[in-house]
Length: 351
Image (tube, helix red, strand yellow):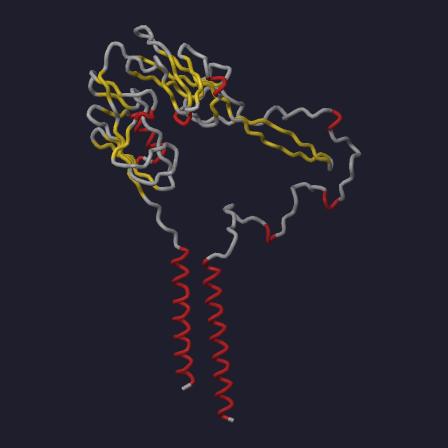
């Protein structure tokens, strides 16, 4: 009788353990990322270059970029950023010589069938279909080039962009939003150095940069030049010499993006910033107690604090295995107590 009761009690507690664990497991399960489709349609005459396709493949993987007729389709998740739009007359051209792709910057692409504004380099939240706009070409079209230099030099921060625009586009000024100005990795646009710098004038307004210039002679380009400052990363190196601390500051310029020429030295400087003699710690300085002095080989780390292989940082808080283990352990203790009480009661009855 007692054995049958114990078995039934164990079965009930096991069922309770499973019932308690299932909601916790489902609560900790990660939701799948939403998937979206970005369709770059070619429209009536548009065709995309291999350069554009390769750029998308490098960013999202070949398996997520598909060419379908004169369209390019990109699949991405909500954790991926929207790609920059194709550059007219470079990554996107017209198959009809009577028409050119409209626009000065990549922002001239038009989205269709979606009320959400397409904004490159922001996280995707919906599907998009993007279609180019064309205009009837003529001999008076303006051929222009956008150049991107490191401030104070003629070193390219990014490759030049060439394009064609309808006559008169720049006569009264074409306004380009600052968000539409290409910004290469590891650089920031220097607006002050950019304005009024080339045969095509660039001025600043409340809406962005205004590009102004007359139609160039046949075979020449109207040039607009943008200047950038390279981002400087400061790497602090601390050295210990005979118990004294010497701090060196080394400027490290990291250069990123295609078409970058020159840039920083890519590493620490020659010994870092020079420290004046009066600031250099001298021998016989402040005594550091032995227990505070860094020893050879670095500070000894207790075994329980030693990082394990893999280098992954432990997450703070309570994990799912800990919660489930606690519930199971509590129920197991309850089972032991109930069995002990049952045995004790049975022993008293036999007496």
